[in-house]
Amino acid sequence: MNARQGFAVIVLVTALIAGTWAVGRVQETSDNTYANIERFIQVLSKVRDHYVEPVTTDKLMDSAIRGMLRTLDPYSQYLDKDEAERLETTTHGSFGGIGISIGIRDSWVTVISPIEGTPAWRAGIQGGDRIIKIDGVSTEGLSLDDAMKKMRGDKGTKVELSIFREGRDKPMDFSITRDIIQIKSVPYAGVLNNGVGYIRLSNFSERSRDEIDDAIAKIEKQNPRGLILDLRYNPGGLLSQAVEVSEEFAPRGKKVVFTRGRDATQNRDFYSSSTDPHTKYPLIVLVNQWTASASEIVSGAVQDLDLGVVVGRSTFGKGLVQTVIPLTRSVRGPKLKLTTAKYYTPSGRCIQKEEQLKDGALAGDDDDDEDSQASLPDSLKAKKPLPEYKTEMGRTVYGGGGIVPDIELDEVKYPRLIEDLESKQEFFKYAVKYAAKHKEPPANYTVTPAMREEFVGMLKADKMEFQADSLALAQRYVDTGMRRELARRYAGDEEAYKVALEDDEQVRQAASLIDKAGTLPKLLALANEMSKSRSAANPNREPSVH
Image (cartoon, rainbow, N blue to C red):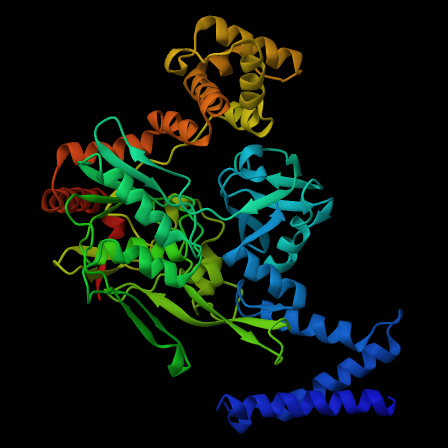
């Protein structure tokens, strides 16, 4: 080891020791901090000097830091200069990529949701898709940061993805052309046919509150009978915007979320400062299993404060707070994105699902029980009782991670053929071909028998493999896809949204609840009755009082 290298190691040790004192976290002597630092330096030196290929100290240190953070949880990351800049553009601006939100499930990169209107969304990528290869390279064990880095790039360039989808025997291959990803929170807002307002909030960015304000103002001009806030497939985003969106409905002084961490500086309570919340009509928050993070904060606040009812499926359970810590004095230098706290709803429920952290430092201590049941079918696995909490009005809600909806809806599963047609953009292709022959769209975008025949002919010309009976069984979804893309072609994305919502079964069910219970008290009472009926029908889900 030469003098320069020796100096670098001394600086490293000094920094580590100084950092320990700086945050006031000097550990007990049983931690063997100094012995472990010495052991690390020994390994670093041996690898650098004797490994079969030359390797730099910088590369070893970078890998060691990233490896250390991976043992904590899927969201703590070391960000070099370029990665830190990309994080800034994700929350504050635009970037080149395919438009996808990802997480880690069972050591694999998994899609939480595609961002609507982006290349990934148009290609048919779905929440729950497991990305097994990026440009031919396996993603097993790949960090979120590295996966995002591989999928981002300049506009016009392509990325090849291999995806495993539940229920499929073979992986699906996608070739997606990157584009500039504009961060838009509200892609659609309008009033449904039964007079219920509808807002689709697809993510949380700096303009979410402003976009929600505009959407509500637009809807309230039409005197809505109620409002559906659609947070399905919303992967989350900025905490500040989650609080501000909650303020749209929470009266001034109500706690909407709080955080708790090991460091007391991370313990914060967030209260609504709204002076004019929108409480004149019943509110429904529509969620599913890919509703995550900031969107779970809003869902939890609405539920706990009895501002409305949560409808759909139990949410993702991503309730960890990440703090971005600069590692140099330079604003543009490397940063540490570290999990420092957990989110809690007003009633005290922790949003984080512990099973999401099975292999990390934050994992629970009951892995042995889970491993022993791993080979059992779901029907035979023991179900842990969910802890009970109380809303502001005394309604029972359930903890255990994520937000358990007040009213559950059946999950919509699309036929495999529809997934294939979406992934190959066949509906889009048909709309392009139709528009080339017709200056005007069909009345109300109605699909005629002749149009169905044209569509089948196009599939055959494209050598698309399908069975006639499968197509007949999926005809309803085929018509929806054709109508949606015709609307997009002739009138744009907003019209396409409007048409698609007409055939959205979960939106229809949510809107029908307001037909049954036209005021917030009646809606809360209906949710309470349905919850009791569900509990009586499922005795395995006996909650424990918390």
